[in-house]
Length: 173
Image (cartoon, rainbow, N blue to C red; front, side, top):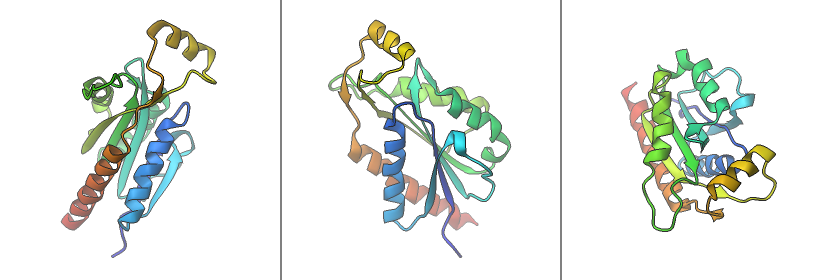
């Protein structure tokens, strides 16, 4: 029996979510699970995968439209496969704040289309450099904290939980 085929698909605006996806991919590889990493906009046929991990930043309380469209487009397949979704954002980045429920709410909005086995919200990163005009205007209104608030150990722990969950899921078959 070969190992599970895992797709890690991500949506990103400024690269933070892609970096989290790469970190998850590294942990999977360290544990003998091969995966393909792709931007949701470049994803093709996914029916040969045993599991899908989807990542998206949260803007204005929602996953990026590309990630939402990914869930809608691949809904027939995703509803019958092992699926994990992670989101990241700066809404929970105030010092000492660990409440990720605003981030998880963005995933729950997708339950109309998909029902992930695992869900996770991570603090993200924010830099006012190179923002689009629209994002700069939003930042001027909400004054998000500037910095990289990602907890890399939390990302790695969750990725190891994925390894365990995927392994248990494969044992059923």
